[in-house]
Length: 223
Picture 1 (tube, helix red, strand yellow):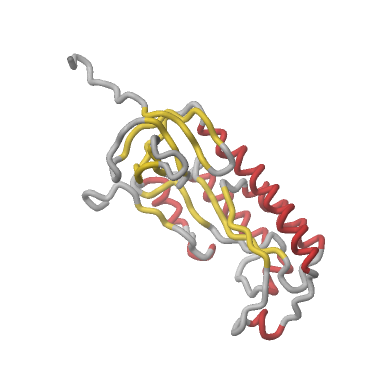
Picture 2 (cartoon, one colour):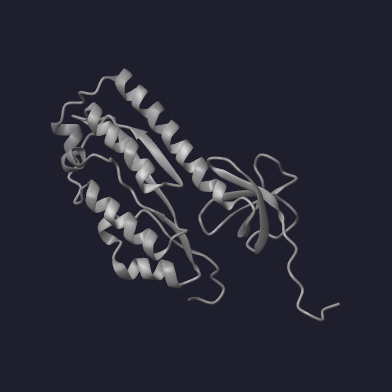
């Protein structure tokens, strides 16, 4: 640990870089946030092979299982692409089911478009029709939001340590900050940016939490 450093977040690693020692650090070091952004890109082994990813669906889910076994309450987020060249209905169904099986707290979702200088952009036909891409991204967002909403609801009723960032963008009369799970919390109370304060969580959505600063317990015998 480093004096004065309250939070360290390990984000966007390639799945191959999440080894046992990295998982153990997330389990054992309080300053390391209970959140990993673990890009999957697709839930289909066939599409992952086309993307030249070095893992398949089963290996990815095995990794998720090992992370959750060591750190049960960890938050996992990901990146997902729809409409990659050659993506079939069954491939997209695998991506939808990956969201629920992995139990993501959130996901960044993207529609594939050819990019110059990439293998897909230069040598693969962009063969998924725009209307199919549109339908798939809408369906994916619905599943991501439903899964995230269920995951974030588990925090309601608990007291979270929130790293204060400043006034809430949506309501300047409230404060905003983040939990160790990298979830934004909008809360009532007054605190300096950069401090960590306890917040009683009373509400949740698919992306944020809300609550009020909780009183700090006084030591026995304090006036």
